[in-house]
Image 1 (cartoon, rainbow, N blue to C red):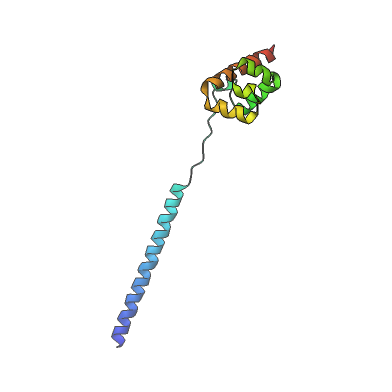
Image 2: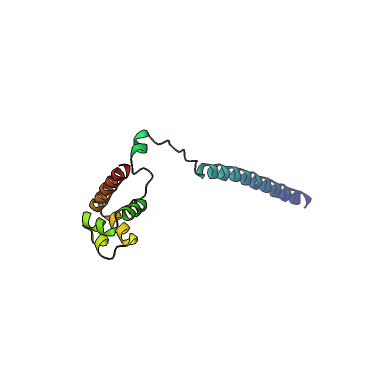
Amino acid sequence: MDVNSNQKKEQVDKQQESEKVSDATLNTETNEKSEELKPSKRVKRQATQEQLDNPFHGVKLVQVLERLVAFYGWEYLGDRVNIRCFMYNPTMKSSLGFLRRTAWAREHVEDLYLEMLDEEER
């Protein structure tokens, strides 16, 4: 009986060792995979001179509309750009929503913003 119990102990010991080895390899594999999945740092590119010269560089549509309303007022905007949200009960929220969805209206507002910048320079 001693021989059988010794053989069983050896088998259990071998099994435990193989489990330890497989756990160790599994941990290193998951660590390597998790390192691969980590997002890399984004490298910020420097703005080109063309971008810096663009009057819309770094300016959001909200800022454009706020400056236009402060400079001209809603009534003038409604006269220049034929948009209902400028003429009837104008709000920033409705105007921004419409300008974001409608390319032609946004182009008109951007042109008006450029004109305003020219007038401010004078």
